[in-house]
Length: 97
Image 1: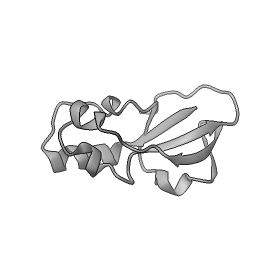
Image 2: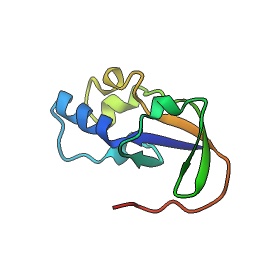
Image 3: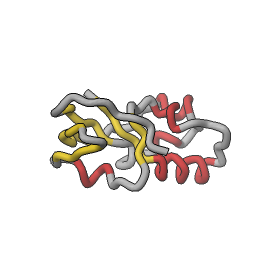
Image 4: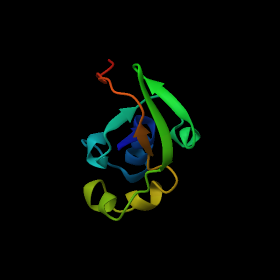
């Protein structure tokens, strides 16, 4: 229902592959997080801004990441591709600056 991706992982990816000028939005994840261990949320319920979620599985990267970001992105993102989750309650998520 919703996907999450860590901004820190995107920064590491860009540094490792020498990529600049791209947004984490190219990963096609719904929410970009900061400071959260997304893999630790698999099998757990969690809350963001009053909205509850259940972590379901890793959001595995695919070949498309190599085209959207740079060759080698899919391999780099193995086990770090983000989180797939179920939405448990309704609400509104807002950009937190």
